[in-house]
Image (cartoon, rainbow, N blue to C red):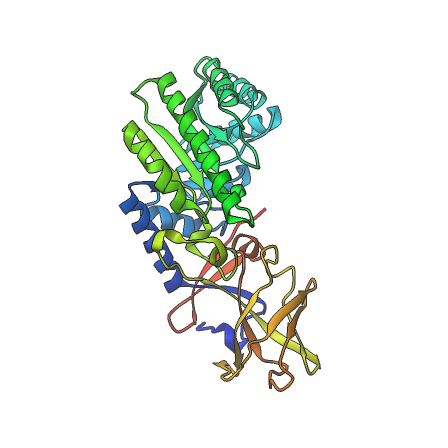
Length: 387
């Protein structure tokens, strides 16, 4: 159709992805992990787009990460064969659903997080009831501020429970999430992260002693904000072992944003670029200093700050000379409040191009991500599958 969102031919608001920016981020991250000697299983929860998840695997991702069985089913149906389910499944009901998934997708190589003996027992019971299924690979969840064991002793007890399952479960390694260590005070973040990494390394050493030198172990840590610190600290552990694989689970990094990533991400020296845009029309200018756009909390993330105005458009062309740029001050369900200069000529019908502040909680509002070419026109449509 040759659509350009600034021409308002598409129903607004709409979410777009600059394909060149996405490709730049993808290639930069793949180069980073290759040179660092680690692997990546990008978290598919950010776009929930099988097309994009498959693209990342085709370009070198070791696996894909999901957060629950709904996401796992979407990716398995799309033909993705190696999945890390970076979450607990709960008790007997959750274990039964996981067993049903494994039976429905027998070609899927699945890794599941565990952090309690009750969870291990439930999974073992489900797998004993299905002897045709191969043993289930489990990762000891080492936590900080969210799920996961809190001490080396708890992790040891969990490993004991897995090994007491008669071979229906087996220890495949360690999983962790470091994002909850981030605090407003950088020194507190550093101390909390150091404690987590030290605990991960200690448990990994004990797990290797327990299992012997033969089996390959996975050490997987997730998040897009602190991955370079994780790599710096845990690559030596993996290299010293010689039979282990460090797998990052960063997912939002491929889209970046104008909010949380820009505030916290150092990126190992790599300059990632925001790929996502939201587009909305000016509906009203009821006061000289106030503009209302057709974009609200149902259309944009706001958990990491309001959307950021990047450019104004009129008649399909950028509107020059808008200084200062309008600022978002409030969101209703369907309305965005912009504070503007009284002398600004922004008018009803103009199109506002916004940057998003959190990719994960923006994309889930849209059934389609529209991929734009280097002229800003729609080239692809990437369906999403949330819920």
